[in-house]
Amino acid sequence: MPFNHDDPKSGGLTVESNLGALCRRHHRFKTFAGWRYEMSPDGTLVITCPDGTTMVTRPTGPLAAYRREQDRDEAESWKRQQRRNRDPNHPGAAGHSSSGAQVHAQQSAWMRRARRQEAKRQESREASRAERERIERERREDEYWRKLADAYSAGATVRYCLREHDRVIQRRRAARVLVMKQPSWVTMHDAAPESSGSRWWDARRPHEESKQLAEKVKRFREELADPPPF
Image 1 (tube, rainbow, N blue to C red):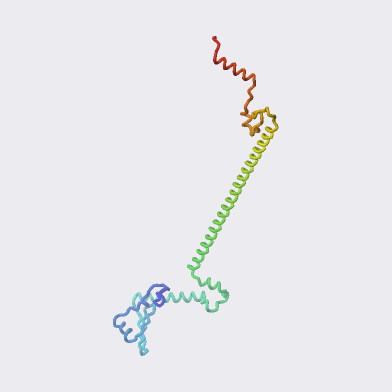
Image 2: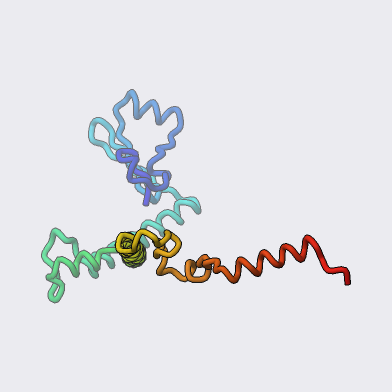
C-alpha cells in the first residue's frame, strides 16, 4: 500500500507518485505559474496549465515498466476481490445476504489467524483461571477441616481434663468425709489421703511401724554397735 501524505497514520511505503521529484525549472512552473501536477503510480505525469491545457508524459525506463505492471496486477487483484466479496455498503449476492458471512469473507487470512490465536489465548486464560479457583477452593476446604480437627482435638483434651478434675474433686471430698467420720484416736496416716485412689499412692503408701518391727530394728542397731567376738 503506498504512503498517503494526507493520512500518515495509515502507513505504507512512499512511491514515486508521492515524491513529485521535479527539476528546478518545472518546480518553478508549478509554484509560480499555477501548473498542477498529477503523477500516477506507474510514473505517468499529467500537467494541467491554468488555461486548461493538459500535457501527458509517460516514462519509458525499466522502473516505469515495472510500476505499470505492478499497478496493473494490483488493479486486477482488486477487481477479483470485489467480485468475490462485494462492498458491505452494497447489496450482497445471492446466498451471501448474511452480514456475519460478509464480514467473515472480507477479513483477510492474517485477521482470521489473529482472531483464532486470540480465541485460543482467551480459552487458555479461562482454563488457568478455573484451575486457580479450584486450587484455592481445595486449599480453603483443607484449612477448614484442619481447623475443625484441631478444635475437636482441643475440645477432647478439655473434656478429658474436666473429667480428671472431677475425679480429683470427688476423691478429695471422699477423703474429707472419711477423716471426719474416723474416731479421734485414728491418726492422719490411717485416714485416706487426698490421692488415695491413685496408683502412685498405692505404690508409695507409708507402712505402720508395729511393735515387733521396732524391736527388730533396736536389736539390729545393738548388734552393729557391739558385734560378737567371733
